[in-house]
Image 1 (cartoon, rainbow, N blue to C red):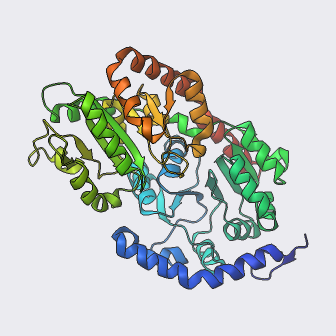
Image 2 (image 1 turned 45 degrees about the horizontal axis):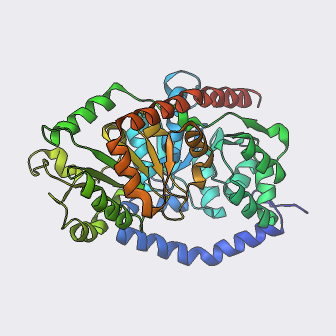
Image 3 (image 1 turned 135 degrees about the vertical axis):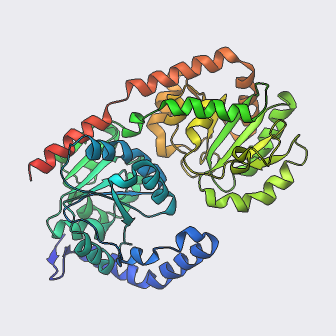
Length: 445
């Protein structure tokens, strides 16, 4: 594949030229979509200019730039970034960019003032170049699978090292990259270091042309989450809000459109066996809670006590929580105490073909996990939990039965919980391995 060096930036090749032309054609639709999302979700309105490379605030130059995209990547990267910020492992300032408001919220909640933060630009050449000129980063550290051609190639053209940490590439995604190899191969080959979660992921990257010497196996940094004492205290406080008696409860976490109705129907069946059961319904995006109100009003009519918002429950003055059947979780950053409190944790995004969400948090707290059939995003994690007997796979038709059986069987819950905790403990250490790789690579340049 022939490369032509552009006077303005990265080397170009036919696939990249086509990609950039398609982006320009898509620009009006990108702007329209951003406007439409801002109408439906006001959190997308502030700082929208940052998405096109226009920034009001100054950014300290020579920063280590972590691009974490959304909430999941921000949570995964936080332990590494905190170690760099607080442990003195880096003398460089730290910048964290995201693409979503939920990711921005997690950066603020988890990292606070120890990092600088802004939105990353969309992958238009003009926006990326404006961003790089404004920020002048020391290095770009991407998380998981965020591979954007202009972002990577323009950074490389300016001599900025590019690293991909906690990298994963499923077999399905690898097939997609093979189909678009005319665009993606030179981009992947431009990445200086890829720290993979598993050997299978490294094999997929190597098949796409990444030299083996640039691939390292470090494990999944999401296993290195910090569980503080506050989690148990917060869980106990939440339990006290529900009344004096101990209630069976389960959480459906990180749910997506199309799942909430199925979960509420399953909860109705659970109530026929466990009349005092409580469901914590936590949509992946809390800005959807208003959209879920009509569904909850309709499907909770036959349920004792109906439903309420989490924010109203914790206010302690507006809700009689003793007979509630459903609590709609409308706040970010509160799942850990709910996992601790719950008898069972169902991981959303798995009843619909979204790919599932991270089960490590409930497993680390000894809470049994249930997933639907679609969990490709965390295939290895779920495989490890299932092999250990810490996780059950269920179709929608069997979800109520699985939840009900676990609520009835204390010994099974305890056995599954212990097994989940052991899986998490065995797989810890990716954070330190990733930090060592990062430090070694940056020192060598």
